[in-house]
Amino acid sequence: QWNARKPVIAAYRDRIDRPFRVLQRATGALDDVRTFSGPSVRVLATTEAALREADALLRHAVAPDEARAAHAVALSAVQLATNAVRLRREAIDTADMQRARDASAAAAGALMMSARAKVDMDRALKPPTLP
Image (cartoon, rainbow, N blue to C red; front, side):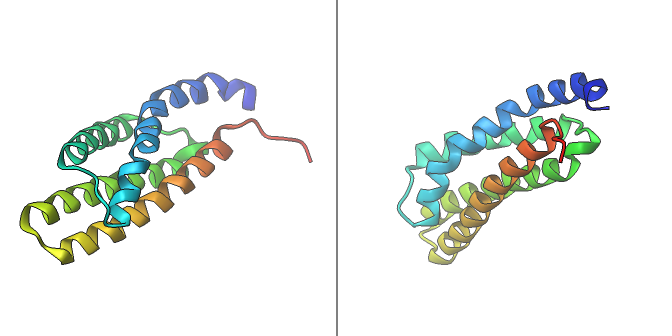
């Protein structure tokens, strides 16, 4: 069965490669948001634009049955990361410490969900092993 589904799974993996790379590249900025140590407004803007693109790519990728749950986690991670970056930018613009705290919490959640999505996706898309 796995061999019969291999082309579908390979095509899906190709479609989600870019959003996962975007999440990986956003890790540094999200960690800075989480720890209240940055990043710069320019980095926030670039990261937010990349995350919005990743969100659109994930929304248009149809997950095979094997990866539906992992796909949902990845989409949630991207959305949470986007919110964290947006909230941090707003916190800087308005000097609002509560928004900075909200951004930090969202960034922590996004980092956790991103790591979980990667593990779940790798598990969902690899061939089964015999016991």
